[in-house]
Image (cartoon, rainbow, N blue to C red; front, side, top):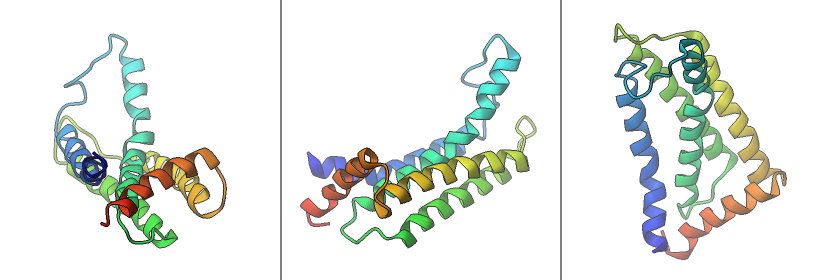
Length: 148
């Protein structure tokens, strides 16, 4: 069971990246369109704050299940990868007439990643956020128990 959970955590970032790619190819109102267009726009724009932050967290969790030591360098690499994927998503959206790409969207993506980076760095390497650190240690334990 733990082996299945470990591999599920490892492949989750790939599925999430595919979902982002597919979703950004579709019109903004393809799945949900709220009756109040201002509220709809506000909610969908605010999702930029979490969309790539979630990708960063999934990447960290996937690497924590590896037997290797998760270092501050690997943590930064996860954040950088999520940021570059955000850039590629904005470029991807620019090719669709019903989507838009903007620098402001990238800033929102980067802010979300930075907040999660701060929390995870604090939990893993600085002795802060003890509850988060406990959860991250449990995920790390999945990789250590089964060998790889």
